[in-house]
Amino acid sequence: MQVMKSAAAMQRLAQGWRRAGERVGFVPTMGCLHDGHLSLVRAARRRVGAKGHVVASVYVNPTQFAPHEDLAKYPRDLARDTRLCEDTGVDVLFVPTDEEMYPRPAGAEASTFVVEEAVARGLESVARPTHFRGVTTVVAKLFNLVLPNVAVFGAKDYQQAAVIQRMVRDLHFPIEIVVAPTVREPDGLAMSSRNRYLSAEERPQAAILWRAIQEAHARVRATRRDIPAAKLKPALARLIATQPAARLDYLEFFDPATFEPATLVKRGVHLALAVRVGETRLIDNARLD
Amino acid sequence: MQVMKSAAAMQRLAQGWRRAGERVGFVPTMGCLHDGHLSLVRAARRRVGAKGHVVASVYVNPTQFAPHEDLAKYPRDLARDTRLCEDTGVDVLFVPTDEEMYPRPAGAEASTFVVEEAVARGLESVARPTHFRGVTTVVAKLFNLVLPNVAVFGAKDYQQAAVIQRMVRDLHFPIEIVVAPTVREPDGLAMSSRNRYLSAEERPQAAILWRAIQEAHARVRATRRDIPAAKLKPALARLIATQPAARLDYLEFFDPATFEPATLVKRGVHLALAVRVGETRLIDNARLD
Image (cartoon, rainbow over all chains, first blue to last red):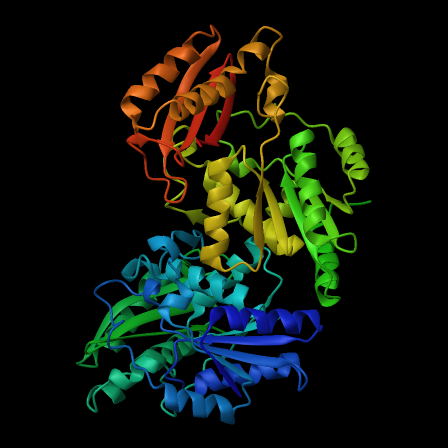
C-alpha cells in the first residue's frame, strides 16, 4: 500500500490510471477507522475488482466543522488507520494536509465553494448550517484529485450521502455513488468515530437511537393504517427520554426521494434522528419497511 | 466535425479519449461566434496539437442571466456557428439543451451551485450579482462533461477568466486554463456577440471604451509618478461622456493578482470598465504598461 500526502502526486497517479483505462474506487473518510469504514473499502473493492485500484482518504476537513464543534478533539489515529487500510486491501491511502487541500498561493484564501440547496436543508443542517457546504466542497476537491469511477459513502450519514448524490448528478461528475449499509455494534449502535467520546455510563444509553428506530419499525408493521407523525414523534421522544444522558436534537420522518417531511408515517417513509448522549452528538436513520 | 447534443454521449466520448491518453482542448462559448472565439479555438489547437481533440460548446446558459437581462434576445445562429467551427478545425461541437445541462429527474430542480467569493466581487458582480455563480456552475458542469486537459477563455471577460482560474485551483480540477488576448475591430472595439445589438449610430461611439484605455495608457506612460485613481477616473469618465449614447457603468483600477482596488495608478495596474452604449452593455479591460 502506498501512502500519499501530496495532492499533486495523488492527481498524477490518478491521471495515469485513467490513461491506462484502470478502474478506481474511492472511500473518503475522516479517519479513526472502524468496521463501518472498512465495509466501505470492501464495497469499493467489489465494484472495481482485483485489477482496479482502491483509494481511501483520511482527512479531517476543517470547513465542515463550525467554530464551536469538535474539530480540535476529533479523534485521530493515523498509525492504526494505516494498518487497517493495509489489512483491508486499500491500494493507496491519501492523507493530505490542510495546505494541500486548501492551497493559498499569493496569500489568497480558498474562495470557491460547492453548495447544494435542496437536500442540504433541514435535519443535520439545522444544528450545523455550514456543515454540508464544507462536505460538498471537500468532496468535489477529493473527486478531482482521485478521479474515481466509483465512490462509496456510508448510509449512517444518510443526508450527506443524498447531498453528494445530488451534487454528482447536478455537476455531472462522471462518478457512480454507492451508499453502503450502516454497520452496527451488537446492541444496534451505529458505528461512528465519535462513539469513542462516550463514557462507560453513556455507552449503553447510546443504543437508544437504534431502539427508537426499532420501535418505529414495530409500530409501522403493527398496523395497516398510516400513523400521524405528530403522534409517533412524541412517543419516540418519550422512549429516548428514558435514558438520563440522552437529549433529543431532532427526529424527523420524510420521503427519502425528495426529503420532504412526511406527516403520515408508513412503509417506505424514512426516519432520521440526532440525539446528544452527554456531550456527544449521535445520528442514525432507517427506512421504515 | 461531430455535433453532439447529448451530455451523456459527450461524456462517454471524452472518457474514451481519456482512456486512450489523448489530449483535449475546450472552448466554452455562448455561440454567435466571432473572430475572438475563433482565436480561442486556434489557441486550443496549438495546446493539444494535431492529434489532440478540440471541443467547442455553444450554450446560452440561463443561470448566468438575471431575469431582467438579455437571455431571450441573446443572439443565436447555430448554422453559422457550425460552419465557422468546422472551418476553424473544431473536432466536436457540443450544443446541449437546457434539459441536458440542468437535468431534473423526479421533478427536482438542479440545486447544486459552485460559488467563488473573492474574485467574483466588485466590477461585473455589482451590476450582475448572480452572474458569476451561473458561470462557475455551468463551467464546472461542462468541465465534467468534456474532461479537457486545457480550456481557453478570452481576456475580454477578464474577471470571468480570473474567477474560473480561482475555481480550478480551489477545486483542483486537473485542467490548465489559458486566457487568450482580446481580439479587436479596426477601431479598437473588443469583439463581442453583443456588438450586433449596436445601431449604426451607436457603433462608432462604442470605440470609446478602447479610447479610454488608450488614454489611460498614455497618461501612465507620460509620467514617472503614480497617478491618483481619484484624479484619473473622472478624466476618463469625461472622455467617455463625449459620446452621446455612452453611459459609464463602472471604471476601476485594481491589482490583477488580488483584484484589490488600486488607489494609485502605475504600470502593472489593471483597468476594467463597463459602458452602456444605448441599450447595449459593453465591457473591456487592459493591463496598463
